[in-house]
Length: 140
Image (cartoon, rainbow, N blue to C red; front, side, top):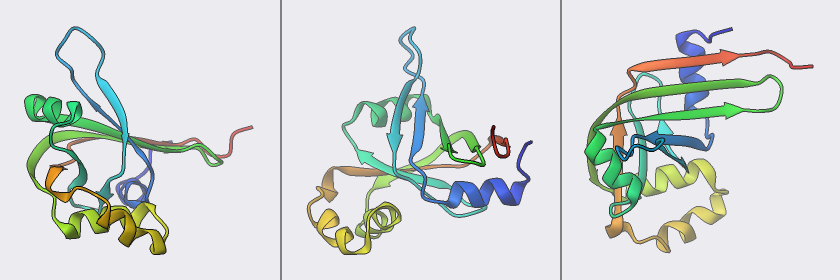
């Protein structure tokens, strides 16, 4: 069953590892890689990566990308979202700290942030345009 707007946005706002996909334009399938991200219901999706990475170059070229998040334990649920790149900016200390804090234990965030090369990172923002979602209930 598809999720209603509030449920899909709430699920996307949880700290899942996203699978990011972007067109390669090379007669191959899209690049598909895991990323940490941040989302607040009704807002943009943000994630950060090295500005020289393959995904950064492909997203800048394609101007859009998609993300999939899922839960594989009962109840199985997923949300897939696709949309345009709204903007990309140098990553701020606030961006890095906020996204890291979604995925790391509180006592590990400071060390992770301090060990990161902030100057190499770029924060990408996507405006969700197209959504697919489902909750398949308890399987089995």
